[in-house]
Image (cartoon, rainbow, N blue to C red; front, side):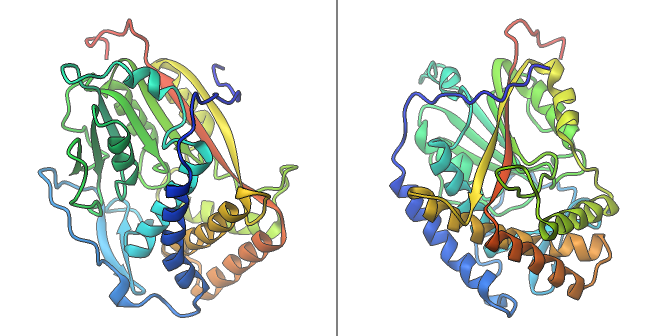
Length: 356
C-alpha cells in the first residue's frame, strides 16, 4: 500500500509567535464556556455577519437546540454540529494550534506546486468544507500570487478577506459548479464527520484536480480516541468515543475508516502521509502552553457532540454529562495524545481530462 508514515521535512519555518497569540485569544472565550456550568447565553450566539454568495443550495438544515444553533447534516439525518460563535472560535483556535505545530497551515509538498505560480499563470486552490474560512484566508495571505476559493454548506465565513480569496455556499453532496481539472491544490480538513458521503467528496475532488495537482487531507478517519504514548486508551475516553461512534451511525451517517479513504484515493495518484500525535494538557517547553490550549479546545469539542449523541444516539442529557465528565477526568489525569491522519495525493501528469 503506497502509504508512508515517514514525516516530510519542511524547508523553512514560519514565525510562531503571531499564531500563538491568536490561539490564546480564541481560547479565552472557549475557556469561559467550557469551565462554566451554565449554558452559553443567547447574546453570544450568531453574532458573526451573514455571508451571501451566488451558490445557496445546501443539503442540511439549521435549527435552534438548547440555546445553540445546530447545522443538521442532511434532511433525513439526526446528526449535526454547532455553527455558533463558540464553535467558530474553537475551529479557529484548533487551526492556529496546528499551524504552530506544523510550521505551516499545510502538511505536504505544497511549495512544489505553488512555486511556479505567476501573474500570467496563477495557481488555484480549493478549500472544501472551509468552515470559518481561516485556512483559506491563511493560504491567501501566504501566497498572494495564488487564487484561493473556500466552499461550504454553512455561511459562517467573514466578509473582509484578502483580494485573492473568495467564499461560496454550496451543497457539498452534489457536483460542484467547476469544470474538470480546475484546481492545482484541493484541501479537505475535518470533514469526514460533517458530510453524508465522505468517499464521494474525495472522488469529486480528484476529478476537479489538475494533472500534477495535490489533494491534501487532514482528518481523524478512524475515530481514534486520545491515547497514551503506549497506545492505551483509558476507559472513560473509550466509553465516550464508543458512544459517539454509535450515535453517529444511528444518525444515518457512515463512519469513514482510513482503509476506505485509501481505497478511494488509490486510483488517484501516489498516496503519502503522516500520523501526527498532539499532547493534551502536558508537555515541556513551548508544548506546555500549546497542550493546554489543546485541552481546552478538546473540551469544547466534547460539548459540540451533545446534539448528535442525544438526538442521534438516544442518550439523555444526564447520560451525556456522565460520559463527558469521565472523558474529561481521564484527559486531566493521564498524559494523552490526539491522533491525526495527514494524507496527500499527487495526481499523475499523464491523466487526461477525458479519462476523468
